[in-house]
Amino acid sequence: MNPPRPKPKLDQENRAFWTGGAEGKLLIVHCHDCGQYTHPPKLLCRHCQSENVVPEPVGGTGAIDTMTINYQPWAKDLEVPYVIARVRLDGVPGVYLTTNIVGSPVDEVQFDDKVRVVFEEQDGVFYPLFEKVA
Image 1 (cartoon, one colour):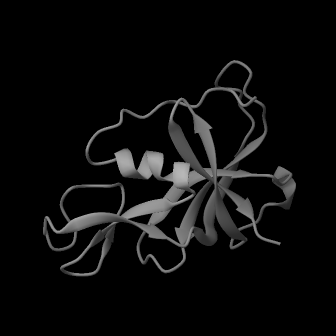
Image 2 (cartoon, rainbow, N blue to C red):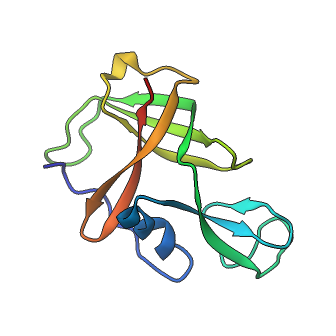
């Protein structure tokens, strides 16, 4: 079992993002007025200030924009090293997720690697993590 991750406080703005993984969906807020995406999730479009926003499923693929390898065991039972990365989502301009890259040795993870979302569930929260695409 993986060590517990910090649990986000679920609210009206972010609940869909943190629970969409139950259905295997990465949900990002989309504005139906200007067509832009907003992340972190908000009830108001950050581009045009419209309230006509809805969390919608996106493809869940992308590329590693930047990354670092962490060697510090910040929590009990936390296995190190691990990769912390910023993932640029395909088809969702301007949206980046800070996440972990899982399923590959840390020395095999590179900038611009293609990745896809996988979800890790803990206490009803589905953390969007990413793994390399072969």
